[in-house]
Image 1 (cartoon, rainbow, N blue to C red):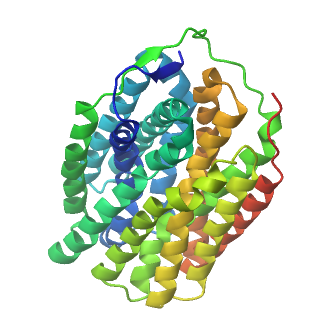
Image 2: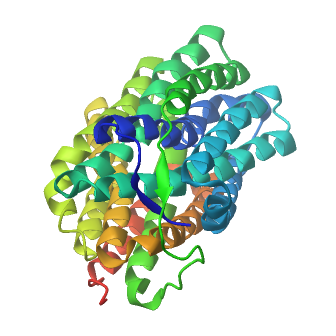
Length: 392
């Protein structure tokens, strides 16, 4: 069942801000927080880069499975309930990750995290689109505001993980996961205290039929974006550390990416408002590609700052652009389905990216992970540029 505009008389900015806590936990902490702990886990547990990358592949498999079932889950539970159930699953997954370095148990935690994150993302994106529909003049801003949620999670994990690892020393990865569990549980409280009520629409509860052929270029480019960005986000902290970066440098790099995500809504809102074709997302992916390319030039502090600045400014808005594109090209009753398809495509890219890049890194070294990331993003931008508005 699709959603009508929110029935609760709440300020849309506040509604979207509390809603953004779901992807902050599911993605910003649950998925990306792993990058901060990965070097210590690899050293302590003797993992190869392939194994370390595979743990993000498992997370992406869970995300993909969750995206495949998201439209059904939303129809069964309601949109907001799907969001909070997914968020709760992400918090539980963090606790599981703290229990053991056993690959199977840890992998299960990563799988559960992916499942929950998909529910928060598809359900939250649908709710954010519904709220934005009621405020046309603010629609692009409100959608971007929702998609800054992962940036909040990046900042939270970036301020905690590197310093906990430095204070407790090698092998303290489990302490970091435990701390992130407690922090995420606290972040979930405002979300639960401010439910977003939506009235059922009068449209049919049957899932609408959506043709994917008209958006083939868009989906292909978005797939490559998923594969390219996740390689950067999985291995960059290891790259910073191997370049001599201490806890302060790692935290600053990670938090800068998160902070730049908050600037994205203002930078991109004009372009986002014209996002009915692939030009908007192609531009953003190209800028994201530039961020990864800068990191290839070296590990000096200024190059890393520039890389984090450019990458953070653009990579979260790429995801927001898909929701804008969906709203501009499809009727409201198709939004959950189309956003789910976009999420599945994204998930496929994320599934392949970490493992393939990790295998390449084992053989050729960390810089090659960035080269693969840059190439995938460049090709993704080119493909999206060919996308035209969908004819109604």
